[in-house]
Image 1 (cartoon, helix red, strand yellow):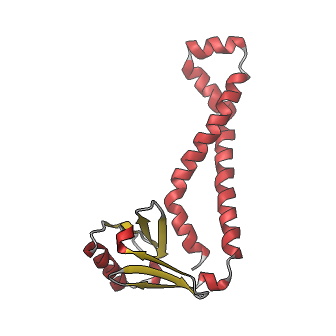
Image 2 (cartoon, helix red, strand yellow; image 1 turned 90 degrees about the horizontal axis):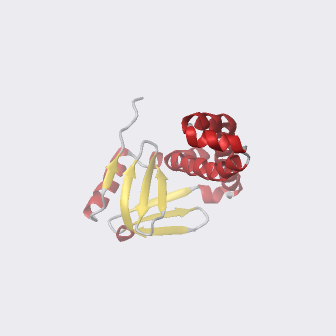
Image 3 (spheres, helix red, strand yellow; image 1 turned 30 degrees about the horizontal axis):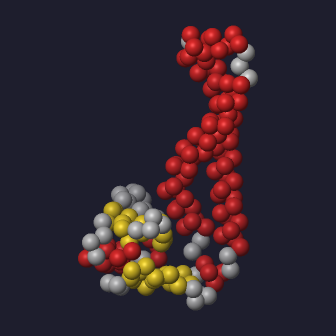
Length: 173
């Protein structure tokens, strides 16, 4: 597993994370902006809210976007550092998939076994296979670890277990 595989997984959740970060930054900055308003500006705020919205975006917008970018870069940097600190044995993964379960193990003999009964959805994205469990945990596997035939076998096992299989459109080369 490489960090590029990790980034492929991040592409899925990063949009929601950016929206949440932007909302949190605005939640903090809006009261500060309202606090600094002069009494005459409060009258303008009630009389012409569109004008004050432009003023708000001019004064706070760059801070909000900068705060969101800072949070995203900070989280990705922390993830990159954590991934870099993993021993090489933990980055060499072996996948065993049969009609009973999906088993992921590494060279350090650490294994994770997910029976099909624990899985609620499997999604085949262009670079990763996303596994959503009933415990609301998302796991993923890089698609480059499986041939197209193996991926169809995984989809068949999931369908036999009654799990919805979602296939994303493949990008054109």
